[in-house]
Image (cartoon, rainbow, N blue to C red; front, top):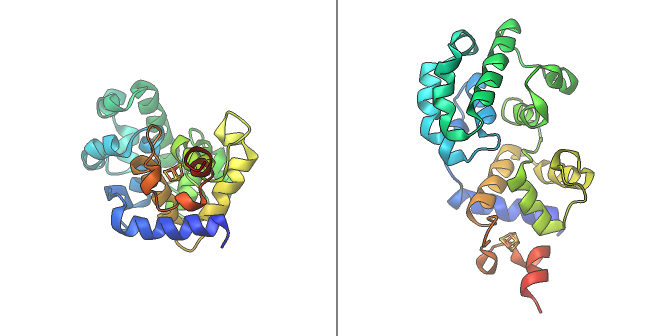
Length: 217
Ligand code: SF4
């Protein structure tokens, strides 16, 4: 079996018993709630976002309510996540833009990326969580698992590394694409951690490049 399939199958099995549960992974939430979660999750630990996300959604239940809010009311929620002023402004501006667009998210990738304040990561997230398209949520955590398992990237910026991006797309090309994405992110947070990864008990260590290099003599 090729390594991509090994990773997909093992992580899907692992996710069933060990995956994390967050409100934004609930199937019944609106597209607005899904997008807001992804914007908040960018460069922020999921556990930190989970602490204020439910109340944020109660206070700002739609693009319109967020667009009409005072910037300082948005900021007060974002204090725990760092760069909060910048991020609150971005969220506010995105909400205003979405009101102009009547909340419509385009399925066309170019049109999606043309929305101001969107960016590559959020565009991927929209394709994944709203349209169920196989788009990877490539952040430093997903990049770490991919690089350890398959081998290192060449470029420092993960957004532009063709090898890393190609591997990420191959991995999430699956009928359960959302679950695969979440499984990798959870695996990165709980097992293949930045410091002291749990390699000796890892369920994919027999196919892992990092494990072979550091643990097999
Ligand atoms: S063996 Fe270690 S480095 Fe490889 S995937 Fe598992 S935890 Fe990560």
